[in-house]
Length: 193
Image (cartoon, rainbow, N blue to C red; front, side):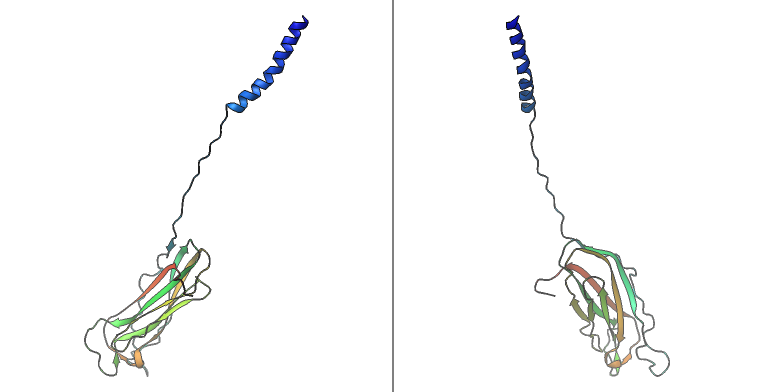
């Protein structure tokens, strides 16, 4: 009986060790690395106004009749604009309003209206470009790149058109005038502001 008890005790002592050995050997761990990327992206929101119509630009009465009238500031918003990376900048390209009439400009008249386009609410300072077309409408385009935005950002970019003038304050020729403002949001040029 004593021998039988020792045998049962020895068998019982072996059982927990066997259970631990089986538990440790029937589990294995593996790892799978998961990768992805996000491309650098800048998006300008849809302009709140697709067209800015200044209407009659020449004064029709008073001491400035025939010359550029006092035209108020015009505003356009590009809502929900964003860049998902640091180091972006706004560039503004402005093209003067130039008459669609291709005939030569006569002395004392102008076929161009210059103005300033200012984009704000992106970097620490605004970005502004002012056209400087001649009376004939030559050299109508100017470009300016603003300060660098040092972090990813989302904002409503505001564009203001102001300071409408005619070259040499000349009389404006009759007709239709067209201009253009292009706002670009993207990586700041290295070595720039």
